[in-house]
Image 1 (cartoon, rainbow, N blue to C red):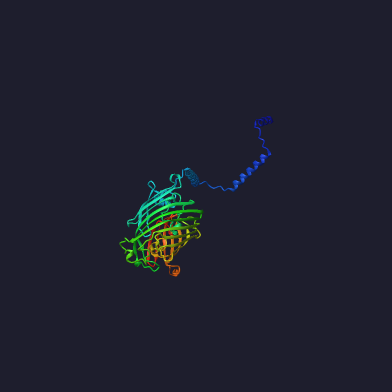
Image 2: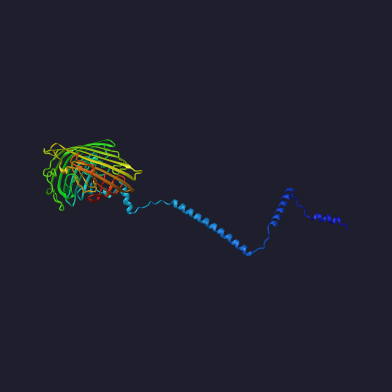
Length: 476
């Protein structure tokens, strides 16, 4: 049998071969070679079912932790976004913090602003030697839209001190604050008080005043007066006065004042002290038996560059006062007065530390054959001058005082002060002995806002002991 035809038939039945391009043949060969080399390089280890299962668990745990961490990040991100979208709530201060904020802000409404139809309840010292008195002040500004102000006050203390006054005209004042009491400004010391000349340019007003002071102290004249001679006297005085002034520059004010003064001196009413006539006479206490009535005229100049007069940190204040007191009855009590008050304030690196310095002079010059009544003389002692001595401790016709304070603002409403005072009195310039001045030193706590001292507590020591003083005004 011929096999050739059978072979041809078998070949015909076979599928056609796939033709692979040469480039693919090369790539396929390379892949095969790589696979063979990898298989040869990788050692074949026997399969361990337990280890493979643990690896799977570890991989699953790690993936879960990553998923949890991502979830926490999303949670924190969501919380932050919600916090940012919340309406901010202001901090609510407690009671103590609210009181401090009120003291720091003099523009805020406080108890001191409370009034009843223009009557303001107040507590004040009627005299340097008096107890605290209670009363009220009446205040109305720009009556019917005109430059007309009315002010009046009445005060009484348990020791029977009394004070009454009335003012009308263009009365100086700062903003909405009440004007100063009527005797503030008739002394060179008071010229530095904020509000004496107010914020306007023109000053023009009249004053009426009456005081009943039943327990004033007198120790005698001169720097050698003894505390053992302390006596009390009664002083009644009345004043009728006209005041005019003008602010020439923002830091310079000139004013004049003139009027009539009436005095009555009598026996003191202090049960713990002898009356003045029991120890002194008309020689040791001039004007004791006869009190003159005065017509007086005064010219005043104030130069003030302080940054904030009620709470200065830098600047200078100089007040000058020239006065004439004429006895209208023709008696021997005519005299002139020169008064000078200079204060300087220096920042020690920052507003929180201030050095305050002061010089105060009173020189009374009686006419030939005249003398100055003892109750008209200026004195040293008390919370504004020699703080280590009682009020009115030293009196005479010539008065010299030097003061220094280091003021440290521990917090915005709190100030701590270290201070020293030195001063003396004498009957004449030739008798002044600055080497024998009376001195004291002490520490003070002041509560204030940025414009003024609200109250202060000072403790001072001298060779006559220690004195604790509480006042509603600055030292100087």
